[in-house]
View: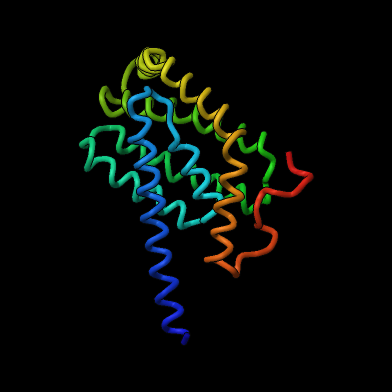
Amino acid sequence: MNQKTSFARGAIFRVALVGICAALIEAVKLALAAIPNVEGVTLLCALFGYCFGWYGVLSTVVFVSIEPLIYGFNTWVLSYYLYWPFVAIVFLFLRKRGIKNRFLLTAVAVLLTIWFGVLTSLVDVGLFTGFLKNFWYRFAVYYWRGIWFYVVQIVCNAVVFPLLFRPLANLLTGLSDKFFPNRKKSEKGLDKSNEM
């Protein structure tokens, strides 16, 4: 296989990877839509950023771009563009730093989930009512109204991450290694015995 064919094949694979990851995020979101705020989007965005790097980040951008086509446009679109790619970027950098401890990865996911509730409330209050007088009071009231939804999201990710992140990351890293063989050996998987 010549270099031009190899490059084209690699480019096709990367486009397909981004599309499949975005479709998987959307499918999981739709599958869990009947259960309020129980979600798998955080897990998948984190996994794709962690295992596929910038292609995982791009897949979250594609996912967010699909969402308004299904649900229409509102303030949440801005929150989604700010938040979901950020989750993938955070986990991309955790991978680059060699962070593999499941409890630390879970703690980061929980903190990001807490930030999601704060961010969406900030965006909604700011865009609906403006950043004028009594903003923080209005923010507190708005945030408190959705507190149980945020608590469910936080608990969901606190349970899902320690159970599923490690085995799924090992699986996806194995796939990633097949298609990205030039990755540094220091970035390989989570299956070392000294990791929690």
